[in-house]
Image (cartoon, rainbow, N blue to C red; front, side, top):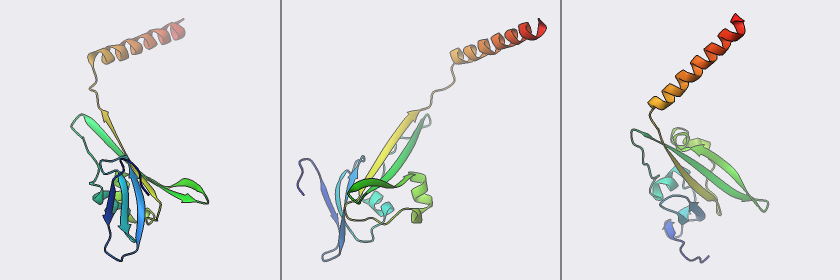
Length: 138
């Protein structure tokens, strides 16, 4: 299999049975040739882990997906956040030849509550209170 711009990584001993897995969406994207029995968490370590950019006002969510071709159709066989992979390593299937492993990193900046939002909330509550007073009070 030859493709322009695709990196190949081999992590198998000479003569060992292997599987070929395509990794997408991380700093270590490419085609990985691995020894049979390599686990998903081991693969994650081989690709260099997950780029984490967490700070005190940033929230990072990492979603891992494993796709496999079955009966001519590629379908999702495993999806979980990184924390589940680390706490439940037996929950994912063994890697097979032709699997596609994706790593999606989503970072969100947490914004502090501003005085404008507080004023808008206060104004809305006062308006609702006046409306209720008019309806109930007649």
